[in-house]
Length: 297
Image (cartoon, rainbow, N blue to C red; front, side, top):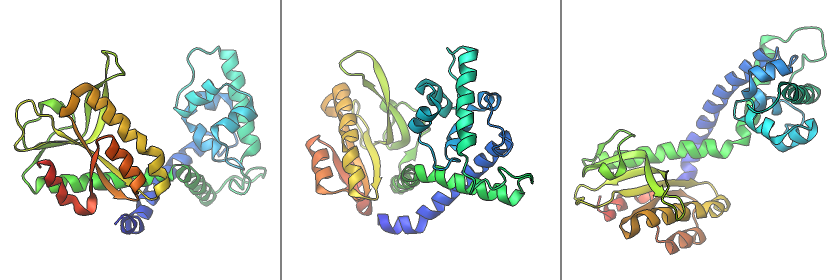
């Protein structure tokens, strides 16, 4: 089922993201005068362009490599990657760091992509679009798995929603409190308050789908469903502790009343399933979605 979906829809999801990213790269090229002006002034005004500039190099630069080559602080690059400039840095030190970053970007800009660098003739529209597409592909390639995972999650939640609605369940707005849901309702990406460690402090734990059964009684908690998909066995076994950690927080806050299950599609082997079962987490395979009824839905 996962492979069929991947072949049919993953290329379209990736291409859609690449088209959107290409527009962002073209915007970055405008702001840097087609990579001929990566000055401190530009970087201070537009810090969020840094990821695009890193992918414009030959070879593309990881964050740590840029920090090492430019000899700048991790805080400066980290803030720029998030789209901001550090607040508690002197103007002189900031200027010096930005100039160092700009010098590295200009020195390592890929001449096979930005073919106009070093020549007198200005970049043509087709050259700019070609360069932007290549850099966008590099940016998307570095986050290919999240792009596919997000598209798959959206599809999974749509499948759960359709299944519930055919059985008379009603969707609620996102801001509804999970413990104030009337019977026969559901919501997506609701925040569930949980305790932080052994402290009295509370934090919000996002849950993909929360469903209050039609026969739910006073004091009963809704069913919590986490949608998971995977295209290979390696990644899921690296991430299997995530669900166990969520279950631990939920149980510490709400005790044995909590019901937390997984909605799975893809490559989940016995090692993963056994680990989750040991933590008291049950699951439903997407190709057997009707088994959700066994949880009182």
